[in-house]
Image 1 (tube, each protein chain N blue to C red):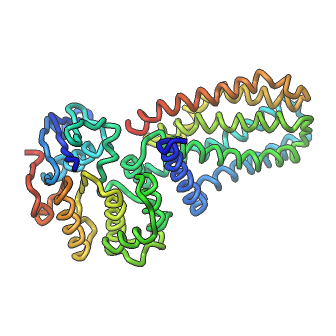
Image 2 (tube, one colour):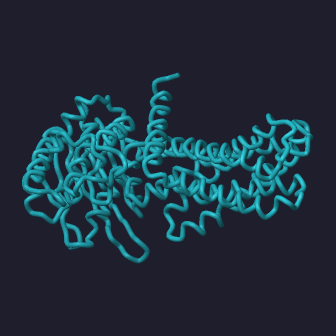
Image 3 (cartoon, chains in turn yellow, cyan):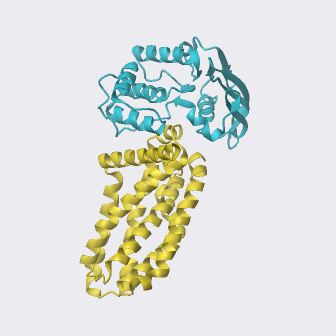
Length: 227
Length: 207
């Protein structure tokens, strides 16, 4: 690795470590994320457990919980920087791509932690059988990466606005719709027992979505951050 | 030794119909200094943000040159550092952690010894382990100086340089300003006549 790229990675890692460190001290996003997900999951499981839900409805419910929980926390990485006036300081020390990458990896870690908590609880509370765990994990992993990729950029846009909460969900929904459709489709196929073959198209779509969204975000973030 | 110069050419900044900076031009080369003064709302802080690259101008250009080579605007931040009331540090990190974080971003070699020396320079010796959230406003201002001076900036921008500082803090700022303009560029925006002493040229905004 060249010293230039290793320096870039070192700086993005510094942003990531700083965000993790401050999050562990404030629990601003973690609390919102986990409490929202846990509450929704418990309400859904208590009210619908006896309904013998079909697999496609279970898949939709799972991603609805993940979507709304992430809406409550993922914009936080940039909102905190704007609210505490550290965004302007940060602009004088790092390139936008460094900041975006650090924040993106932080959001991916946050979402994977959420999925790690929600998935086993969802499987137990909703009495879901998972015939093939590996494609199930892959669909969740790709869905989480795509979700983090889109919401990190949208979070940066929203951080500069006044009506943040509503704007974040409104902006996110149309952008995330293709991702949610593919994630629900993939989860449905896997839980139905169709395995890799059944989920193949959705997995391809999830990979394409994550790659395109992150590539576009890297390009656009410069304008958003310095706009 | 490379020489650095900063030039503003017909700089304009408008917020809707409000024209804050109207065709401002000036230049300053190292070693040198510039003072910016003017009544409240005359655009001092806006000008400093434009020079720092935090805000984009509506018109005109900011030209930064090193040894006569023009530096691309997206790379200006490597040369410029700023201390301003609108710029904050991370309150949930300690003084050391803030210094370490910004040192990593600025490609500055980090050591505890250097951090202690920098903290001592700004009068914060022994307070590096404390969370910045527990600092007084004057201590936060001192830490901002430590963070800004870490990469030895070629251009140092100071907006209201002595705000929140006691007499000892003001003396530290005075020595920082004197040191900066010996070899590099210092630009100070203030209404305090004391802060402009020793500054080579002064421009008045809003007149």
